[in-house]
Amino acid sequence: MDTALAPQTVILRERQASSLQGTVLSVLFFYIIAFPKGGIKTGDVPITIGYVLTGVLLVLALLRASRLSLPLDRLLAFMPCLLLGLWSLFVLSVNGTESIGFTTSYFVSALYLPLFGLTFFSSLILDEHHDRIERVLVWAVRFIVVYGIFLFIFRQTTGKWIEIPYVTVNAADVGQLDDKHINRGGIFKLISTYNNGNVFGVAVAIMAPLYLRLEQKNLLRVALYVALFLTLSRTVWISAILILLLRAVSRGIRPLTLLYLSAGLVLVGVMISFLLNLLGTDLSFIFDSNLGGRTNQLAAFDHVGIIPQGAIGMLPEIVYTGILEQFGIPGLLFFVAHLVAAPLLLRLEGVRLLSVSRAASCQQGMLLYLLLAAADGAYSLIPVMMIFWMVAGMGFWYAHRQAGVTKERM
Image (cartoon, rainbow, N blue to C red; front, side, top):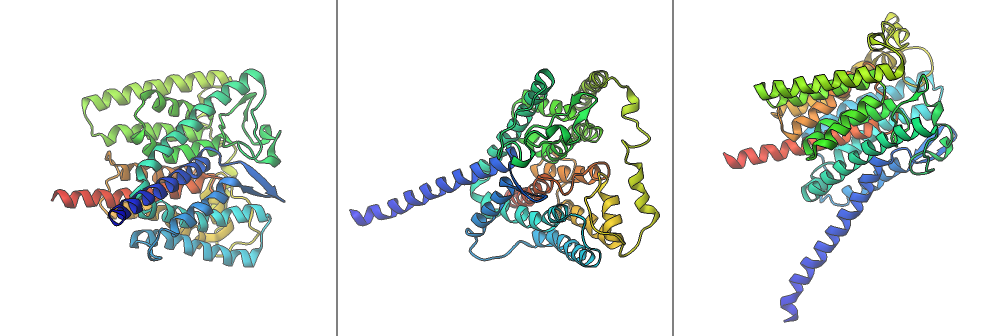
């Protein structure tokens, strides 16, 4: 009898271990999306708990690997990142840096976060825990959206922020949120736990196509759009409109689609009109010929070169001009390649951009970032690239799963 029960005992223990591991993964994953800014600073280098936890998640994923290898598409997606990193290291060795903090953030975004996203969000974790990861993603986005709207209203009505050191803010930034370029003439941008309206908006925009595909509650879908517009960022407003358009045309052009799109655009117009009135401005705020004070960044195209002169500093809002100015023409080419590699590979694997598949949603989120980076990409700021490569990793997994289901049906 004992011998007969032994296999059942083993199975029970394996299930318990899997459940425990799934719970740990869920808690850590929720934290890195919901509280990306909590931590400390060493000098001018922010050490956030969320980024430290990505290392824990990466190790947990690698411990599940029977052999250390990456699928070909993930390896090809990482190659441009490696080339970008190597070229950037060469330029750094020639020109030096103005800030260790900014430079560290840049290399973390260019090299480490692609490795994390492509490894953790792969079959190592998703084959067994994809349902759990999807649920956590939905709840994490729900949290930052709802909390963001609440905090926006709270700040406007009380004149104060809610700051929890090591959780919602870096301990070194307590009392300094007003200094983070979030004031629009006395109206403060929606920042949620991301401490910056543009960073929140860009990060959520990358996740939005997938989140909206997973989210079942219409009210919470609407709340996401409201949160994006309350960032008071023209760049984020454009992303919200593009997300709406992508969701509409992905269903196919039908009368109902046109009705849905028309209603959405009317609501967008009403929201923008209300916010412009709140800010005490007009359409000139949107159609600003000075690009919000960024036209001077276009001067980078006036003196392009292979190896630029000048120490590496913080990337400006228009990321492409900053890369060109600091890392030259090769750097810009490698940079564009490392952003476009994953969505291009998904297309080569048969993922259609304008479709309702989850792989297509991931592809849409990544391509949205390519456009946002031409205005205000927040490339080196936590947690934009972590989310970009999370979406990339999930996109590859969805594509493989979709291809597998197609083969089974054939």
